[in-house]
Amino acid sequence: MNEDMMTAEEKQNLADKDESQLSRDCQETGRGRGVYYVHTLGCQMNVHDSERIAGVLEADGYVKATRRQIENNDLDLIVMNTCAVRENASNRMYGTLGQWAELKRERPGLQIAVGGCMAQKDRRRIVQRAPWVDAVFGTKNIGSLTGLLKKARLENRSQVQVATDLDYFPSQLPAARASRVSSWVAISVGCNNTCTFCIVPSVRGKERDRRPGDILDEIQRCVDAGAKEITLLGQNVNSYGYSTGDRYAFSKLLRACGKIDGLKRVRFTSPHPAAFTDDVIEAMAETDNVMHQLHMPLQSGSDRILRAMRRSYRVSRFKGIIDKVRAAMPDAQITTDIIVGFPGETEDDFQQTMDLLRQIRFSSAYTFEYSPRPGTPAALMEQIPPEVMRDRYTRLHDMQETITAQEMQKFLGRTVEVLVTGQGRKDSNTHRVTGRERTGALVHIGVPAGQEIPQTGDFVDCTVTDSSRHYLLADPQPEAGQVYKVHH
Image (cartoon, rainbow, N blue to C red):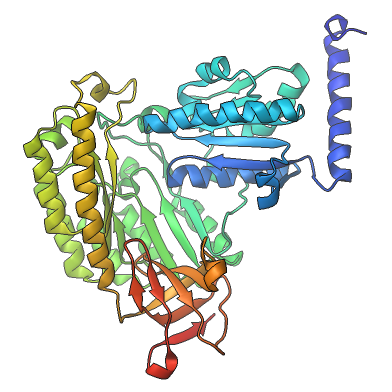
């Protein structure tokens, strides 16, 4: 019978039969409901959401792809978790979807799904430009993914579900953690700020805080599962609790983390300078397992540009915070974000940013050329010529790279404690292991002959013997008095 002539009930029965056969075929080949791969673009919040996407899929019987399966495109489902903050992320998304269309022609059973911020923002456009996509789901619809995929197979057309209101926190969903020793834990979602360059509030919604007890329960579950380190996540972590009138809620949360047995390290990202208070600095300095690492977005060193960005602080306020942090924690490693070429930025504005970077000496800076995002006020402002923006970016990037290299050299000869997370890309050739020391620097460790080889999750005290701009090397020689000690 032609499918167009079937009743709705007959179509459903056929779909159920096809779904059942697909499930049996996958089970017989050890692929579960299907082999999946989640391709993540964007920030740490997206990385965390991808763990939830993976958890939802695995709860429904999907199996995570191995590295070899990914390299050979031996996949039944590909999920792209997208970013909308910068224009190049949008371009990369459509370019990658075009490549996946070719894969789908080669593997007709392959399904493709798109989630995240671009899905929230451009839900219909994605389906129009990439009609081979089976499911489009928003930042608040992760739990609906498997249902959308089943419906797409039933109806043989794209399914879209993008909610504007938050019915549940993604953290309520199952998670397939990318690391067993380091876990992301979201304390809030959304953002209440109105920065003129930023699209996050429109795709993530207003800020909503999780209950402290729920957060601490999740952290305890992570520790019980083997996590040694957690990172608290939020678009603005230090405004946590403001919605209930408790301006000290975040520092209380940090101190509560210090009482969790087995939790060795606590980090957080990202705070906002306008809401960063002295009690948070005190909690960082006084809580043993809270690391002396701080990512504090500056964006510009010009008060005039900060006003145009609608950033609710000025340079003097920002510098005051950094001074207090360093007074309380002299070893603190502080990183930042800088936008170059914001509309209306003059050479003088840019030089003020350069001067401030020379004064503060961030351990590293994530620098970006301004990218207009449709729907934001800054997109309607007079734009800086691309060649001017590129020149300023190059100058600022080169100066910060020099500062970063100099700051990393300060580790030489120090003994650092490294939490081993595995091997880096080049470590299999050098036989080193990789991890991060307490303030966040990446360290590659060479194991001295005859010494214990550390495993993922172990801690290593070791002497730093060399440095580069982006990592440290520890090839200690115990016979020369250098330190190498593994503890579990």
